[in-house]
Image (cartoon, rainbow, N blue to C red; front, top):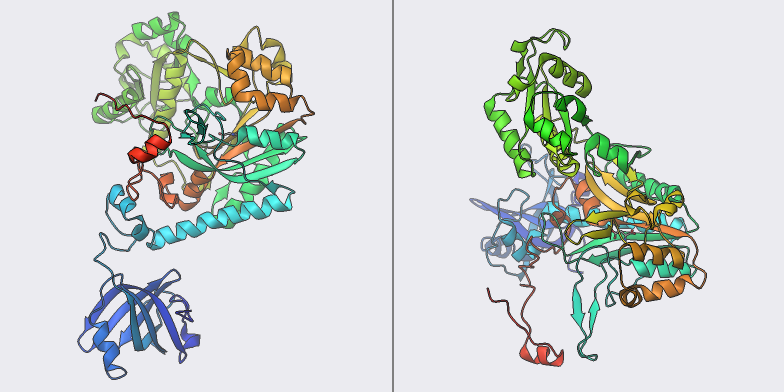
Length: 599
Ligand code: ASP
């Protein structure tokens, strides 16, 4: 070993010991005769002092050290002089008085400092990821991520799960995105598809009698580039046999509470998890990913609003649309600038406009509202009685602001749920210490795709219709709810799962609703349908995003921050410069000819 002690270890109790450390020169300070360096390894920083009285050679060499050089230093741990202690550092009461130094490697001047406090664009950080990862925050992230998977492994092992790796080179196992494909050299013109999740494989493992499977699995999805998506990401993927929805939820709940309690001990975590049906979630929050750390629930006010003289309300109501809103507490004094900003925000979410009704705080009560107390661009079309009624329906008090959107219910929900989050941010309603974990369940099995003009699976094709909804499968697919559940944390989706279909006939009927042709079914799902004819047990499971979980634990917004080597938002790896063109010879071997797009 090049070292017998880690930089972060020496304490007052080890004063007097002779040690050898190795690491990176974090900082150097020359104080006349004395040269100080902070030496860094993964355990932390240790101050080293070079005094020519102890070793002239070491002192001289120390003078030439630069940031990020790799060195090995031998010396004695001494107590720092009174007043020179650094309470910020665990090793801050001692220093290493160096007698020998060996330069193990030099370094160019790094493109940015190895410090948590840097202001560098993401591209540079990713291009020099090997330096970026030296930063204490990133080192902590790597360890945190490891601890999360360690807890998962231990917990699942104790609960009878077997970890099984499944192939990466396979055929499409769809989750609603495009496949990444890999050409086969030995089978000209044929391609493997990288799994969007190990879905079919884990279901096959249930037919194989494994009963409890898990994998920290890489999933590949060629999706349109959206903020905070990665083309490849990691899931805790698991599947269980002979279970109902509640059994799956119970396992996840126990595991996630353990993870949050161990890794965020000071957080207030929902225990038990909150449960909301999809319908209730949409009704109260306008989204299936509600942030439940604050209120401001939505109310439907279509009928009341439509009785006003406001044309926009009347038109929307008579064309089958919806009018909904929520109350921003204490915002009744918002001026033009604030409401303009909110309107712009609503428009950026797709709204035509945003209607607001501000109630002055000087009004003694809603019943006593007078004309002067009301501000709204629609004021002249809203009678006082209508405003009072709207206030009562939405729960607005004097001093509050009602925010109202009219349109199709999909649009209204999207806009209002985004606006609700935005208002919580502006009003600082979120207690960052709160972790709200919620199950959203009973999702519809299908959703209508306007572009394709047909039903598409809301999740994936393998989820089981609820037994009592089987009757609508062929006649009214939109009515079919499934044993389908999402885990949502602080307004972000953490994972999805379902009880699966394990019966060939039901699976075939579901394919029928989505209008898959016989050939397509055989080609993509033949193996699963065949397996279902050989004794498939009832089963269900989930795929839970590991990157998102670690990001939440680390207090990071972007999952890129918790992946060692992530891609940029345009799916590029700036370090390897991937994707890249390949040689003509490789193309030839793969029997591929590239036709570049025109522009
Ligand atoms: N395949 C997952 C499941 O277990 C879900 C997902 O990958 O999003 O249902």
